[in-house]
Image (cartoon, rainbow, N blue to C red; front, side):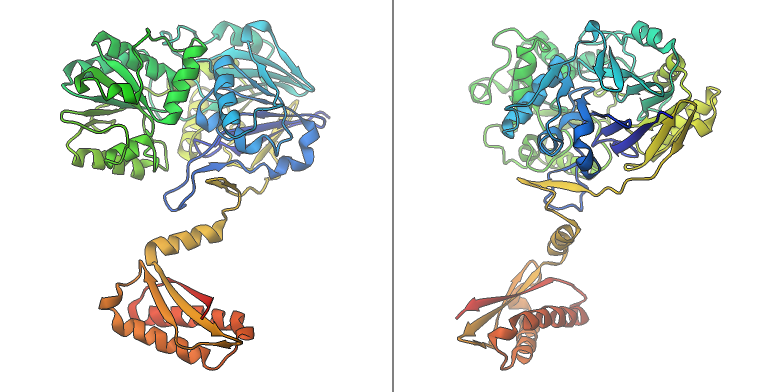
Length: 549
């Protein structure tokens, strides 16, 4: 009996880190490969990527990675994962391919990588057991796709991020006719976006944003800063259009924004007359009231251009009188605190900040609301449903919507990452789950930051450190130690405690020798740590270090 296994490596029960797998006995296709963002207690972590260890024994089965669109949470993992996946070909539309090639080149991964252009008008793509029909969808970025996939057990529709926008910025409509025609043969399983399942009605057109931009820019007496996702080219286009109307130049701020605007312009997805987009250096010689800045860092990422700007630490751009900052992106789960911190910093500097809590017309979701999702369900009428790209509440909202439309709620699979669904021609059921771990990217380190390191970073951040410096003389340990406090106590005000710690260390060391250092070190760290907690109810990281006298 033919069987297809669906596996979520990311994007089920969460909004980001999207990566999905369809597997038959002979073949595998991967759908998207995105990044996630660290929680506030994951100190020092830049991004989180999917755990692909399940695929390591199956690399020869992987036919391709199919990309739906060019947002970071769908393509950002590729530079970190492509080598370990055995470099399968990457299939993407022109804009997504341009962004991906730039990322791979930055990480020295582009050479010898097969990149295949997806053009929905040119027919299906056959990859082993899978025949794939791409179709245009609307999202907050041009060139977004869904995939209608013919498999040995029936047809699967994969539509991760979409809405129905009848007036899109790029004038490319959702290809309803193509999807409807394909679905005539029946749909076994719909793998669908569910993020908007708790919102009534239909999601607004992306085009409505431009009027909101125009209203703010027309009233502005100084600099205007617009922050959005760096890959949100439709939003950038509208910011450019509104700026042109009021005789402003547009200044990209942030490496990701600069590169994406450059790539989208070269590929024909962004239209700006010569001289409208200027560099930060050129902008310094222009009147602030004639400038609109497009700034990276809408999720409040530490070290981003917006974060540095909010703290007055940006080297090239400085906030001036009458500045306005517009957030044209709603924060995703996990980044609310850091976005709030940036907003507070900006307001403390006298900036007028426009964000969703006080004005809701500056951002339109790229994800369909209940009305959009119901259209997709009505067009495809599948036997089974797998809601993705949302948190658990969104998955349950989707299940309720399916039931309201007359389908059996038992046909909806509410999954978390690592869970599988076994699909056969006439049946579907959950399979054996795959154990996944968080894979962190920290600078140039990938996967080398584990739970222990994060716990140690948290301890350092919350409790500080106490160093016990022990000198050695020949084969003997010197019991007169040096105590070093960082982020724990201020030594001049804590002489009594520091003296007690030094005396305790002296007693532990006694006349012991260097050969016993490992045991001595363990005793120093544990006993001094316990002593400090008994005195001040704090648990600094105690680190004993051996040095030459």
